[in-house]
Amino acid sequence: MKRIVFILACIASMYANAGTFDADKQLEYCSSQVGRALRLLRPYDFKIAPRNILATDKQEGWNCRKAVAEEWCSGFWPGILWMDYAYTGDKEVRKAAEGYTGQLAYLSGRPAYDHDLGFIIINSFMKGYEQTKSETYKKVILDAADTLATLFNPKAGTMLSWPRHVNDYQGHNTIMDNMMNLELLFWAARNGGNRLLEDLAVSHAVTTMRHHFRADGSCYHVAVYDTLTGKFLRGQTHQGLSDCSMWSRGQSWAVYGYTMVYRYTKDKLFLDFAQKVTDIYLKRLKETSDDWVPLWDMDDLRSNAPKDASAACVVASALLELSGYVGGFKGDFYRDAAIRMLSDLSTDRYQSGKRNVAFLRHSTGHHPAGSEIDASIVYADYYYIEALLKLNKIQ
Image 1 (cartoon, rainbow, N blue to C red):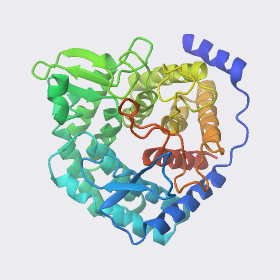
Image 2 (spheres, helix red, strand yellow):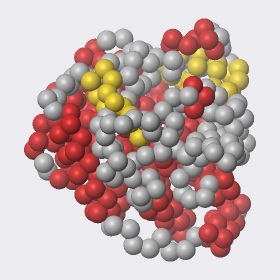
Image 3 (cartoon, helix red, strand yellow):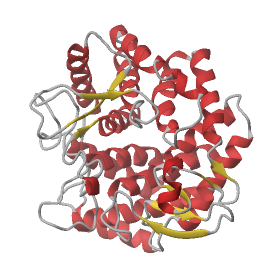
Image 4 (cartoon, rainbow, N blue to C red):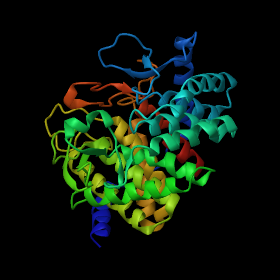
């Protein structure tokens, strides 16, 4: 009942009809930016991948990093290329996508550096498999899922996110971002891999639901468990403002992650929880932001607190999917909210335009570390084009 009251209050205070939003027009913009970026990247070095363009940079092209296990963003650029190819059918874009994807194959056969193996493989090989049905890609996906599963701790019931930080946290650490990587396990279990992989994914989702959230549905960034007994020890932050604040991208991972878990399980438990974590995100967004793009942390109320466009992109993509599962009045509400987010992101305030080759500006990476603040970041672009493709299909 409280959720319905919240929805009606939002509609009464700030929502009107979402109006007409032209996803095709924005997808054409994305394709143009991809073309510009590829021209600057020639001749292609597939051993590196775009990561960011900082607000202080003078160049229009991407800053690139080595495409290695330690670089969690390695898969986003090939994923962008695969999605642009899905929209345009451009053979040059496909050729580049194949090159940037293929370079990452070796990661499936080496020990998992951390949970981000999921991000890397989902965003490159799984997006590529959607377009090619390549058996080579499928094998990489299945092998990577087996590798990722080695991080599962049966005592805690979750995946270990950062093996390198076990001593720092004095325990088994699981971060909210890890919800996104469960898709690799679900997909593999449904496509010829070990069916037990799905059991691990469900266990992680349930345990995270029990310990990683406050009563209102907002999440901690990190949950720490006793490595030997699996006992939950504490929730804290790593990239947020404080242990008790709502770090916007962390909450976006929860919205997307539990929507995805429901996609595979069709368990109403996860559908209800996806709505709970979404509703608190939208409520806090209304309270703290001047538009549909959140502050980097919804408890950083300084006048100069930076935005995080990447969080808006993740949530918009998730809501377009979640709206279909919920249906009815609330489903319409979620879909309209996603359109509002994409509409704001598609204005000159956030789009890069001629300033640089990225799709968007004003994302925040790791604020406490002073890293990638108010920047163009590749994962924002990834979820932006993914959301546009979902909306284009709906329209």
